[in-house]
Length: 420
Image 1 (cartoon, one colour):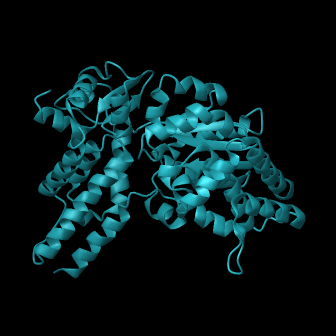
Image 2: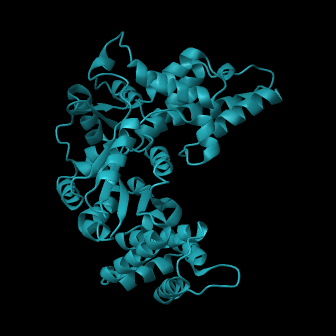
Image 3: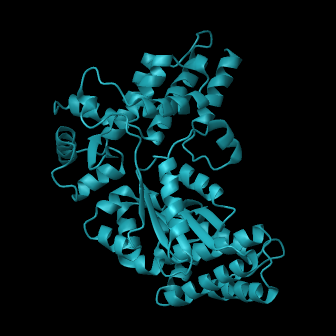
């Protein structure tokens, strides 16, 4: 077995993890410029808001690069605000997220960030805040850990404490919000900068959970007296009842991060279609930074980009699957030179196509067929369509008007079924 070849593919496989670029090392190694207009839009809303308590909703397809972009935005604005950027997935079990523990997590992360930065909140205020946390959650500090660190761990893994928090504040949201405002005001008084909280990964929640959180409880989420950026799935904003509620409560401060558009509307149907060069170059450059050129045939890298539909997550997922296949081949045939070629890519596409096919029934195939033929479904509010949009079967693109297309790999499923 070629140890060098094995190590090279292992490195590429690690480089292709489906994780945002939140660490400085990853940014140095893998960052590619994109999404500048979206960052500018976020900055404008934060900087120019007429009030210091504006709420912004940030949305886009899963895997379009929102987390990486939010991390970059938080760094860009860090010198002007006391920024607290956290993932709800790292804070609370995703199946148990609700508006109450989101607000509680905001307060906890504000306190943890202040502690990490050694913000000298007056001891009497700090003691009062920690006593409040202790008595409301029946948790006590230990000699090894502060109350904040214990609560942070428990909030993630202990369903009992999440239940107790919900029971405590379900009818006393105003008390919880008042405490958040005290924490923020204490930080701002010492740090001399306004607070900005950015909560990532709320867009990864199931649509039914998102609908409950935002439709029924958006007023509670907008109560804290400081700036907050919330994330939400793009499919949720297609809900007839939910969209106007969100726009009204946030003063229409909704920012959409679009999918990178490889083709103009309808061009991908043409036999000699040429992708938009700027988008194509971005996708290919992302691969170049993660896979050594000798491990992949140049045309195959381009085909991976075309099969991604312009979704960064799909680009990484497809390349990652190619590396997995190559690693197995190297171990199975140690004397053979292995590169990512057409055969490897076909195997990877087949694997992902099969994954896509599993949940599909006749209703979903009909919606996909209509979307492919008309660049929109018959009913964009239909729950099955929203689920397809949430699951990346359907991709939303933006010109002067929004339009939809079917994921390139899912198009092959439609061909297999004789629907196109």
